[in-house]
Image 1 (spheres, rainbow, N blue to C red):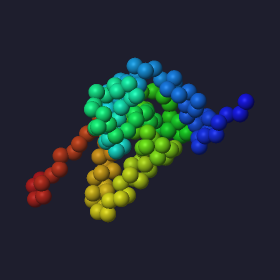
Image 2 (cartoon, rainbow, N blue to C red; image 1 turned 180 degrees about the vertical axis):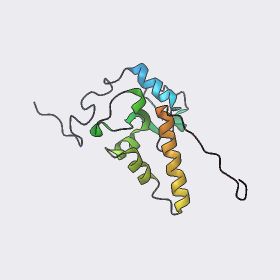
Image 3 (cartoon, rainbow, N blue to C red; image 1 turned 90 degrees about the vertical axis):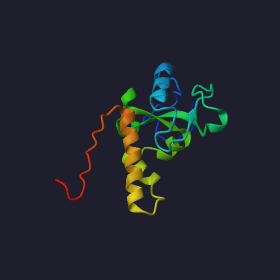
Image 4 (cartoon, rainbow, N blue to C red; image 1 turned 135 degrees about the vertical axis):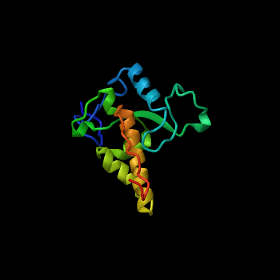
Length: 145
């Protein structure tokens, strides 16, 4: 029997597993942790069962899990390596790193300051999703020591 064609290698991800590669309770806990929003584009996501509780007209995409360190780059299926993504962002990312994909998402901004800030915001959401503590440095006022 021949396997159906796929843009990814069968060994690169959870190929052929459907949603069976992770327990439903763990999957829903990750969606809940990320506020039922795609970490990349911030759209409201939902499952076919309507688990997010959001009104249908607010749901912008189907929920799926994305690996922070992709399976193709050696990432595993631990919840700390998973985040909520809409199907469009997950497919658009492919096997690019989080930094590469965040950069590609903000290339539409012409102002470098806005582009840097938005990329930082996306990466901050990824880090928060991972449970990484984020330390913010207080900005010093100009002219004070």
